[in-house]
Image (tube, rainbow over all chains, first blue to last red; front, side, top):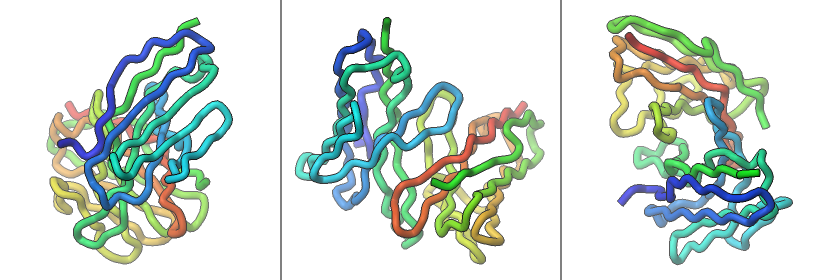
Length: 114
Length: 114
């Protein structure tokens, strides 16, 4: 089983619609969860951290279900500028005791259509 | 969030040669990491760059191939040694503070090995 799994899409969504992405992770010891956004030929940029209680930032809502090891991202009133690849990211516990890096899903490609 | 710069932004290299990539952070940060993003793939953690000591490598990455230095809290280098076409990738530096798991990325170095 892959450490972080996402539906690669693409999701073709009309402008103004609501779209939801899901992601599952395999390491139950993971403690921190994030959604990053990556535009074509750019570096990933942190969109939001995901907290157990769920959190919202404007049009974006993230949810975490630790029991099911499942993370979601909801985008409301989608804009053309939301077109990007959305990466589900989980902190990676280093077996050798080193600092935690991040494990990335392969990303979900979103295309917002006018 | 810290501002991260990388040099060079891109390079085309011949097989068998080595390239050193520099990463500079605009503030003192505790953690620095190096990632690789191969064409069409998501990011993979190469290693944690430890200040004043040897880097901590992830499975599948070794010091002889990817030597890393971190002489102080704001600067790190990654060398890709004895390059082959399979090393063609984007190499990204990231940083985070000790009190947060949020990581921020540099713009990446696009390496092509011919």
